[in-house]
Image (cartoon, rainbow, N blue to C red; front, side, top):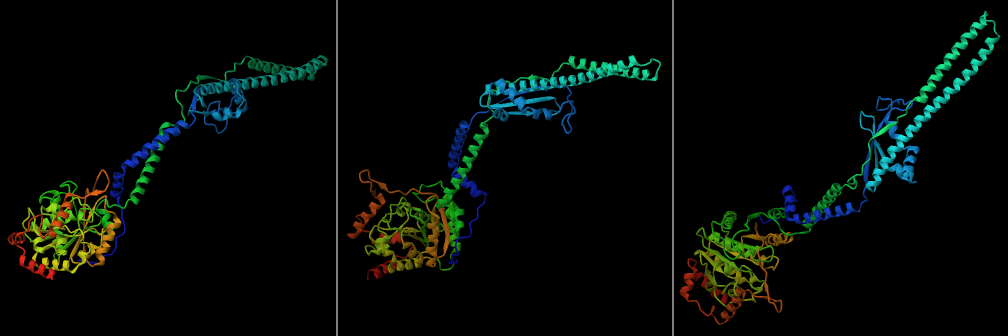
Length: 566
């Protein structure tokens, strides 16, 4: 086992990390998405409504309409040009007159024209803040356009007719002159023949021009017709509710993901094995969430029991010859180390090996929800603190687990003033003696976040295991625990990940002070009994001690007790 700690590896994230982030903080994303949708709805309601009404006009040739070069149609009328004329001054002023309005610029900006492909139809669209105004505007522009077009056509016909009449007048004057010359000329002369030919030509031209004038006078002007009049729109085209709602929801979702990512960044609690791997700590096992609620040892074939069987195999494989002591400490306050140590010791003893578990987490450090004595079914006193304080012997403090014959338990004990005794040489002597008479020794150490005792105990062990509670233990606490173990040279095998366990002290209704658990009260009662040389009113008989310690060597333990008293 390598005791060198190289520090955490560089953090890497994959899609499962982001999916886990969403799974943990989905409610934030949902709330902000709903809030964004509500904001989008409020924004949509605050926007002015815009209604659009459409009038369709069929454009017919009128006057001398001609195709313009570059037009999209091959008819006599260029509809692209006609669409541009819709915003001409004459058309807009005509529409303003029909609408009885004077804001010509506003009307110009509100009208638009579309030309459907391969048609002679103009679609005149008018936008307004009310449906009735939109309908009236589209109708007014359609009427103004047709009226203007008809007026332009009639004006063009009148201009052409006037030009023809001027030509007729000139030709009539020429004809009068020619007739005067003919009256003075000799009918048999060549000049008379010439004048006579000119007179016929002029008369012909006058007749032709008169025919054209008559055609222009009788021509019917039809600029076009409204084939679909404007209607009152049933709903506004702007704002688009679906777009605003979707935009609000999308912005809310993005904000929710951002808040979730920030919350994830600021939350330093361990959430899974990936967090430990990123911090450079191997994961030896993950205890399933279902099972004993922190009150008993897992059965061998339960999911939790199988997890600790695998942990046992890894610990045994990691030990080198002569190594047999493993310390279990928690990265944060709580019963996690007690549960891991008890279950690991039970798993080791199921192989037939002689196992001793030492409870070194003092009962006055905090109120525990899963004390070692309760887990393994032994009396809470006497224990290690009583032995270190010289109140009882090691043989008296060693008990056999109720359901596991090869598992021997040394509880924490009942001496609440044993602070500092874990640093004494007596503890080293106890560990050395137990090394010689047990196959494996499991030490339940206090949390590295609670005191420096975990370091002292780790220095006596061959390996260390870190107990980590998800959603309670923080990643800096894991890094600090690994660093503490590294500094005393104890190899860290890895961490055991456990679900969050309940361990809150109960508080009285009157004062709000924490009340001691029954086990802690029993521990203090045991301390008082130990002062009188008894344990719960009963002094263990020597034969009972021998039976309880078997197959450990009770004589060796007795010798250690004598040396400790001297």
